[in-house]
Image 1 (cartoon, helix red, strand yellow):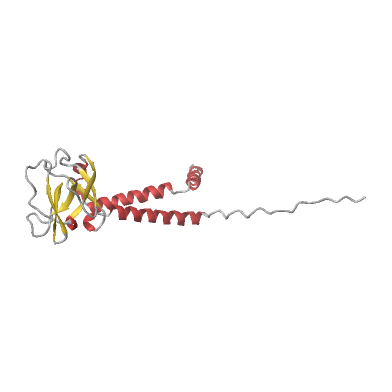
Image 2: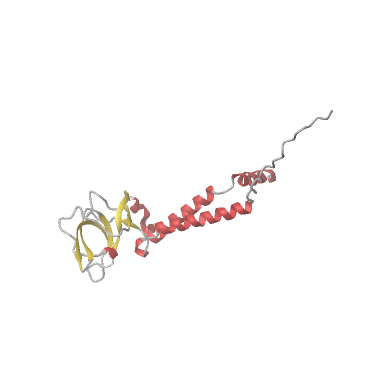
Amino acid sequence: MSTLIETAPVIEAPAAAEAPTPKKHRVLRLVISLVVFGVALLALWPAQYGGFTGLTIVNGHSMEPTYHTGDLVLSLREPAYQPGEVVSYLIPKGQPGAGGRVIHRVLSVSTTTGTAVYTTQGDNNTSTDPWHFGSSDVLGKAVFSVPSIGTLLGKLANPLILGLAAAAAVFGIVWRFGRDPKKKNSSQRRHRTTRH
């Protein structure tokens, strides 16, 4: 008597994906860090150098009680500004104080030959500013402030230095948290075993 034994077909499991090598991890970490650094640099690049972000340290009493001397105000560049918004701008060439930075509230917007012209006034002032300027002179609309920090920053308050420092901090954080913890632990163990 013969017995027929059926066997099930053998199905091979799909090959596991090749685990990334430490070198691949380092390259990937470097690429991610460079992308994050680039995005941070672009986002934090000062408006006065063609970027989107403005940092202004308040000096004077014209914007009290909204802002006080030493407050650091972050502003973001926008295509247009509306009455009631606080803007940071550079006094245009040909006007008294040309090149100076002012942070005041927009009172009105008029149009001259198709171009917006802004009139501003400090919250604590009784008269409007003598300057009239266009959107190209505006560094941005105030969106956030940190009280008194400008006093502490002193000479480091150059927007270019602050932007680069912030981008470097982001790069350092990404790099630090992107490290392989196993590699760190093995190097610590190596140091412990070599001490006598």
